[in-house]
Image (tube, rainbow, N blue to C red):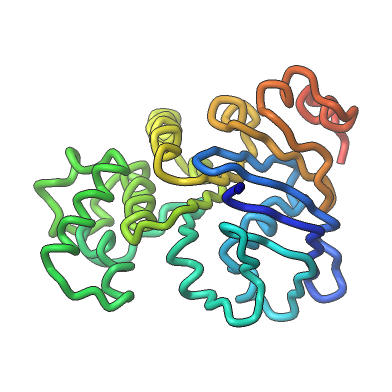
Length: 251
C-alpha cells in the first residue's frame, strides 16, 4: 500500500476552482517534489495532507486524500490528531520564543506528555535526526533566536519530527537560507527519508532533481505530469513540462 493516495481531488477557495481532478500515489519512505509556477496550486496541494486548508474560511474539498488507506477528510477524522502524524515545515524558520529544548519539546507537551525522561529522550533523538544535536547540546536552555537561520530551520524540523509523524511536509524549506545552510538541509532531507515519507514544494528545479524520487508539475491547478524524477527531467512526456524545465514556458 502507498503511504499517500489522492483520488479525483478537487479543491475550491469559494468559487475559485484551485485544484482540478488530481490523482497521485506517493510511496512510503520516498521524497516527492512539487514544482510549477507561482500560484499553480502546489502549496495548496501540500496543505491538503494535514488539512491546513481547513483553517481558511470558504474552502471545499471533493474527492479523497488517503493516509495509510484512510481518507483524512472522512467524518470523524480529528484534524489535530492528523497533524501529529503529518508534520509540516514552513518556508521561513519559525522558532517559538522559547529555549531550544522547549521548542523541540513543544509538541510533546501539548499532547499532554509529562514524563520528563521521555521528553528529554525525544528531544535529543529529534535533534540528532535533524543533524543539530552536536551544535546545540551544550546550550539547550538558550533562546532559539540565538541560532542562525539554517540552524533555526533544522530546529523547526526537529520540532516537527519529535512527535514521530510518519509524513513530513516541507513548503520551500530552503528558500530563505544561504547556499551553505541550503546544502545542509538538503543532505538532511535525504537522510530523513529513511524514517519519513516526505513531500516538498520547491521553486528550485535543481533541488527537485537532486532530492526527489518523483516530481509532480502543476500548472493552473492541474497536475500536468508526475513521474520518476530522472525521467521527468531528461525525457518528459508532456511538451508543457519540457518547456518549463528548459525555461521557455510562458505562464
